[in-house]
Length: 78
Image (tube, rainbow, N blue to C red; front, top):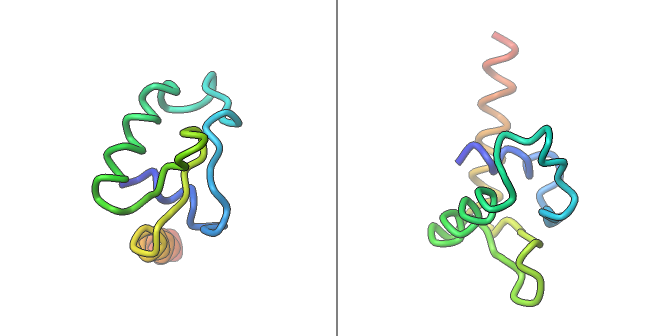
């Protein structure tokens, strides 16, 4: 679920897995695809039917990302 935090800053924009610098990322492209499939099964993200590198948050995913963002803000302020 930690991955939804990426979307918290701009939840309306899909993440393009082609644009991730995997030399600095905490996983491989294959692992990110598997993570996206798991999040899709929980209805947190939607994988684009024409380009499986484009991953968007669902409404439920946006709510979860926002909650994570708020929690992180509270934790850092404490």
